[in-house]
Length: 389
Image 1 (tube, rainbow, N blue to C red):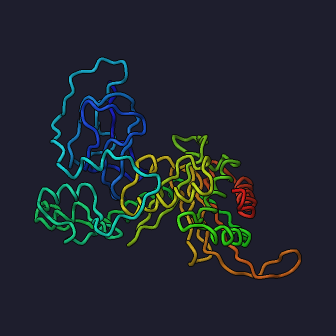
Image 2 (cartoon, rainbow, N blue to C red):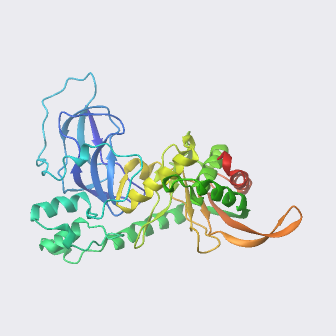
Image 3 (cartoon, rainbow, N blue to C red):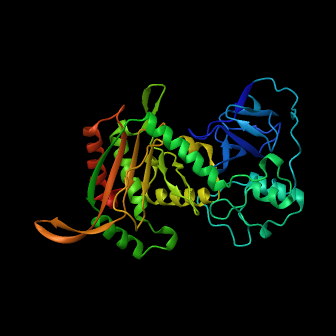
């Protein structure tokens, strides 16, 4: 019998709160199935199972704050003798708020919730249901206005004395980011290479493609950047992988982390899993989905932990360049400044062109300037030929 434990959802995570079970004793589970929801400083994260078999017992209570590594459930593998299903001090699922939606398949492309749906974490919905509180009357403190458990507790007057003045979700997120980035700068010997690229061919291609495309099929410049970075990472594998326990392990696939700025502040970088197997259109759809779910506080643990290289951009406006901090245990981060119009030499003539400055942050334990320069050159080759991304 295997024991499924609470996984680490990032280098900055030490504990999380179990807010929802999506399985019960006797249920059959497969690798990759979502079995629970854990609330962390970065929002509610769906926990995927890495075991195959039948759930024998749930070993943690909803509402409990659990350290990383805490046993969550026992799972009997196929072929093993199945003991009588039991529930270890786990309360019945509240009805009806947690039942129907939990088992419905998730769409590939998430959409913005209807205006009538109040954005709130699962724990907040359960507590509001228990206390008879209308969520629409509350003001959420999570970035983007989402309602979290602390908001409902405050409204119900049920905040524990020692937490009479809890830190806001934004404060907790900033603390988590500060801890992770400080650890990264202290332990990873960063070096940086920058190069300014001509992206006029990419913008011209985008204009032509989007002109005759439906809104849902239009491609943004950021998707081209992600695809170019993925292609470069496939070729320069030294930039794509994890450094842990004193050694670098390159990854067979490219799981492209996409930095997402949350409304109200804060940052998360969930990964597009197997981005190397995606088309440009699939990459764009995947990015829309990640952004939507990140800002709703509903990401999956695999997306938060399995990134192999991260791409971060400043969007259409802003500073020309940015040098970022690597997300451990990754070994490279691609940063792109906002596009700028600059005089540029094309076929011996100076003309105005849209350009962008790419800055590659790399781990000197794994790579050096020559390999980083090759990565940038491959990125430039790809972005100049957008129709083949």
